[in-house]
Image 1 (cartoon, helix red, strand yellow):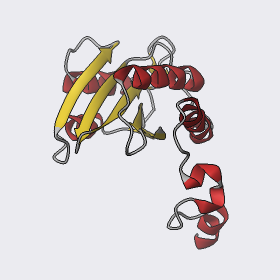
Image 2 (tube, one colour):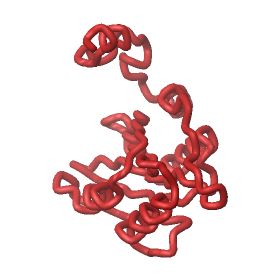
Image 3 (cartoon, helix red, strand yellow):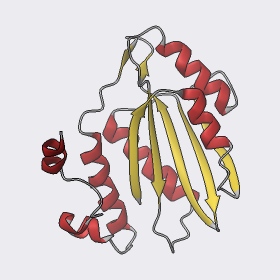
Image 4 (cartoon, one colour):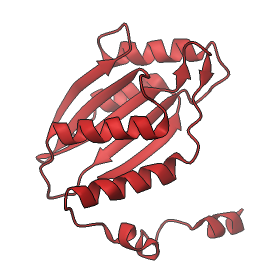
Length: 172
C-alpha cells in the first residue's frame, strides 16, 4: 500500500475535499473516533478549535492509503494498516477519522488524526514520519504478496520528476 502523509492545517478545506470529492464515485465516512461530533465537518471544527489553544498551525496529520491498482483490498486490511501506522507514529488514542473513497471500482482510504495532545495542549511530534511510512508500506506489500513498485525495489527507479534532496538544496 502506498502511504502518503502530511502535517497540515485548514481542517474545513480538508473535510470538504474528503467528503465532496468530485472524482470519487463513492465516499464513506467509515470511522470517527474521539470527537463529540458525528460528522467529519464538525469533527474537523472541533480539532481546529482545540488547536487554537496551542501555537500549532499544522494540527492535523493526513494520510492516504492507496493499494496496488489491481488489488481488491478488504476493509480489514486497511484497518490493520491504520492501527500499525498509529502505533509507529505515536498517534494511538488520538481523535481520528477514516474516509473510504472508491474510484473506478478501486477503494482507497484517507485517515486524519488530530496531533494535539489534549492534556498537555501540545502537538505530537511526528519525527521521521516519511521514513517510517515508507518502511511500513514496504512491509505491507511484502506481507500480502503484492508486487513492489519499482521505486520501492530501488530508490533510483522512483519517479524521475521528483527532486533528490541534494538537487532540491542546489536549486535554492
